Image (cartoon, rainbow, N blue to C red; front, top):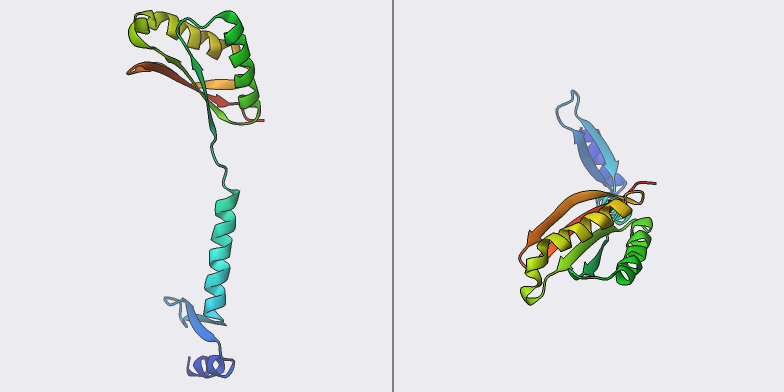
Length: 140
């Protein structure tokens, strides 16, 4: 150990104990600041490679007509193909809350028609004045 300390001082580097419980203890002569820098750099690279989940939203009214529905469905297909999660919701304004069943039917129809592009992650659920549903893209 004394020789290692002397050697590390001569090289102007640090003596780092790798495994203290081993007999004899395992040490390494390294530049500790450089080691920390490399470690941070590795962590940063891993973080940047982690996939970020993108959530795209599509909004419907309870009485959305067929043309608008088809138009929004095309967008939904594009979002799912691009690998984004889809949040489809029906927004009930004023007294239109009496058409809850229409909203649910609309969302379930959408989920059924998007089956080949994504899978239903959460069934339509009423939260206040909006009924939401999530669809996750299928893995390629």
